[in-house]
Image (cartoon, rainbow, N blue to C red):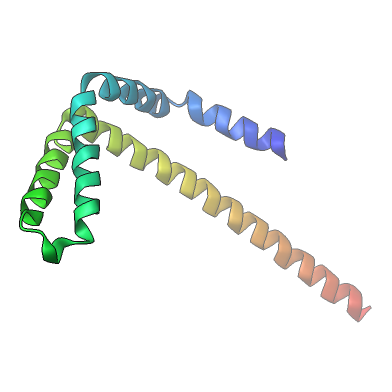
Amino acid sequence: MYDLIDNYFNNLILMPEFKRLMELKKIIEEKYSLLIVNLKTCEANYEDAKRYKDYMNDFDSLREKLVNAKKKLYSLDEVKEYFSLEKKIQKIINDDLNELKLSISKQFQNNKRICKLANKI
């Protein structure tokens, strides 16, 4: 069983889409590290302030900074491609898992039928 799982993931990481995803991850982390740090800082500031938004005068400006930080990072071509590939790979994995569930379910249904037939004999 574990060999099958290892084999599946080894095949997954050999896919051109996965290789490109890893390449983009490295590019994004190196090329846009300041934008990433800015986004994380804005997210942290916003989350801290969200608890006290009714008592803060600058809550809207923190929200605006967060929105702008997201726009700057997520509008980059490399980031768009990264998320597109991530979504595509996730769909492949989900489809494979659904196929596996269906196969297992059919196997259990067949075993139940066999058991019912055996009990009737």
